[in-house]
Length: 210
Picture 1 (spheres, rainbow, N blue to C red):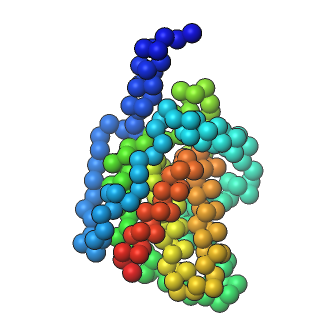
Picture 2: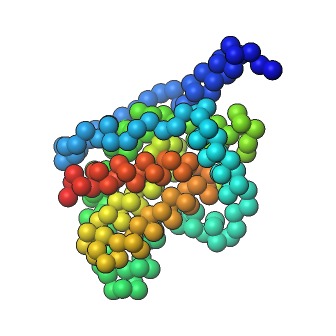
Picture 3: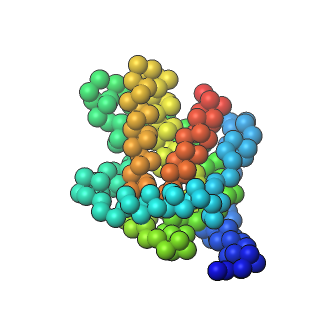
């Protein structure tokens, strides 16, 4: 059995793992007036039971992604706004695409800075430590730290904007945002807690901006 000292050294080594050593930053728009750095707490530590359970979950759902799942992953990866098109067509709703993208240009730097503040390693970096394998569908959109999820934040922003515009369809909009988060998990590039944090910070930012 490993000694307590060896265990602590291993724990420290795991918890010191980051996405990458260099931290970066982007300028925040002056319209953001909340103390955004304190809205979400730090992600679960790398050595926590929560992180291990999340990795076990990711191993399960990434082990055999079917064609439908791959199609969803590609759609969300390319343009999450497309998730909301079927709802707009079904109910004859207008999607204010230009406004959504303008708002995202303001929200994204906050998400980006939070990513590098917490510098959480991606699941594929950490899984081998636990003897697990997270299968990743490679794209060019997971080249930043994991927490919070940018794609889920974008989908959540769309859901918040549309919910204010069409409150009767709120549940449908937020269902699509959750689907976007699930797609990023099945792609193998995010933990569920990345999505939870994205939903929370995006709601706070939207309340601030609107």
